[in-house]
Length: 131
Image (cartoon, rainbow, N blue to C red; front, top):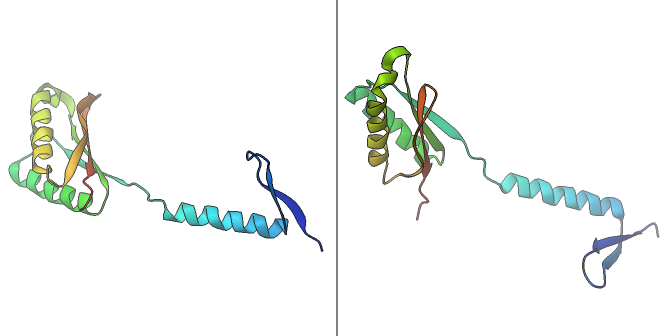
């Protein structure tokens, strides 16, 4: 009959076996794995860059972009980049990021509070689930 004895569940007591075409079984397993992979969601991270002296208009412009990214389901990485001697304005950068967090409160939740890494102060936001 050209069929194979295939062990389906080796950990069961007693182990479960089926008499089937092994190539067809492998094909169906691959198909299931491919389907599972396509259903999984891929998380994208969008970056928004600020300077420590970012003006009101620029802040609002970037805020609108952050809102649109969050509504699309992307995570947002906001950071303040300190060039040269602007590193002395660490407080301004932190205030800017906390203000952004306050503005995005209804669209996102804060994943990571402002943290200084080298010349960048970074903060992560993830979108809130829609009800």
